[in-house]
Amino acid sequence: MNKENLKEAVEKRRTFAIISHPDAGKTTITEQLLLFGGVVREAGTVKARKTGNFAKSDWMEIEKKRGISVTSSVMQFDYAGKRVNILDTPGHEDFSEDTYRTLMAVDSAVMVVDSAKGIEPQTKKLFQVCKMRGIPIFTFINKLDRDGREPLDLCNELEEVLGIESYPMNWPIGMGKGLKGLYDIYNKRIELTTPDENGDIYVDLNEDGEIEGDHSLKEDSIYDQVLEEVELVKEAGSEFDADKIAKGELTPVFFGSALRNFGVTTFLDAYLQFAPAPGSHMTEAGTEIAPAAPEFSGFIFKIQANMNPRHRDRIAFIRICSGEFERGMDVNLSRTGKKLRLSNSTQFMADSRETLENAVAGDIIGLYDTGNFQIGDTIYTGKDKIQFEKLPQFTPELFVSVQAKNVMKQKSFHKGIEQLVQEGAVQLYQSYSTGEYILGAVGQLQFEVFQFRMENEYNSEVVMTPMGSKIARWINPEQLDEKMSSSRNLLVKDRQGAPLFLFENKFAERWFKDKYPEVELTAKL
Ligand code: GDP
Image (cartoon, helix red, strand yellow):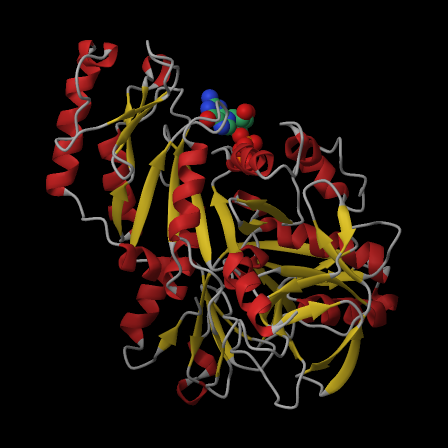
């Protein structure tokens, strides 16, 4: 690809993570988007895969048992001259550090909210990661075809809980059985759920924001009510500001029903207009790598083991940061300084895994890995060494102590733990006083995956004893006195040997702070 073509290809890319609380409708909306892009031919394809009808990979009994997709997949489609990459994120108790790290690999995020439920806790956490990165967040409030909460109430909650401004791009006209359409503030039109007396779905609004002339909708009392609400929102709410959207300071809010395919195209069109193309990435040395730079570079944000039971190897997910990927290319691995040939690449599509010929900055590729890669690794071509900034570490919230079931199998136990920890599957700690191994995670699923893989890949059965949720706080080693530790604040060290306390709860933390006011305690993200 020449320079011009590369630049053009990069500018076409829109890469986002879709986040939601389970059951808000993430799968349904993803499917609609893929339908628009012509990737799937029938609604239900993604769903079928999710429920297991499609998943040939029974590598994870867990996946089947829980009826979820553990693998956060990558989907791609073309629409309106753009190439869209969607990165799915698991939620709820299936939440893991991978979910956070996925947000490091995208340029924007789409948050799907159930109109009856509003913002739920896990969504809030993901949101905070987006905010830290300053990436734009687009909100889709779903299930308008059901009775939900008042739109004003939902927008207020968004602003309060997330601490970000919101701007309703459109406003529901009715709800549930009484849903008539959307008052499209941004496009200055009304979008109807069913065609009007003229056979139109879209009705233009005049300068005053009203339908010109006669129209059946005007005879409905809901019409005046919506005009009033929209007036109120315009007066009291934030102004539309594309700059603020770009910086993640304001989220445009869209209403709709994914199931009825209502409001989804309106959302997608606006998304494509305001979502950013791939941006630059900073290296540890402080150099900015532009996406259309000729040399290839990228980083690994996720490693997935055994997606296909017939292959024992792993798949490393790479976000391309610059240049173009070509099959069989030689790259440098920054951490080791070694050269590697990227011959066996795959890319993940909605219903098939296709061998990828090439991809450019903004795209996500999956590479078969036989153990070369670690999360956070940078690969690049060219003479100048590139190491992208470290991926943030997240503070685990759940802990278990772990031992080998069979004491004679210490070797495979240690090997398994070391590799899985290196992969970023779980965090490893060690108790100061007893030397016992403790695992930390942000979601329960990480432990289940760990246990399953220890048994299946390392032939090491493990015994895990739940310790429950704890508040992990790192302490300045110079201020540490081992006597500070108690049963309510267990002293452990992390993999780098840095000391931290695992507080039983907020009270224990407060008690500690009162007792040792001079001691600095820090959380990771
Ligand atoms: P996910 O867990 O966020 O991926 O949610 P799904 O897309 O699987 O949807 C959860 C349930 O909500 C399913 O039964 C969907 O059919 C249903 N659903 C999704 N979108 C809508 C919608 O717009 N309206 C209604 N009434 N149901 C919906």
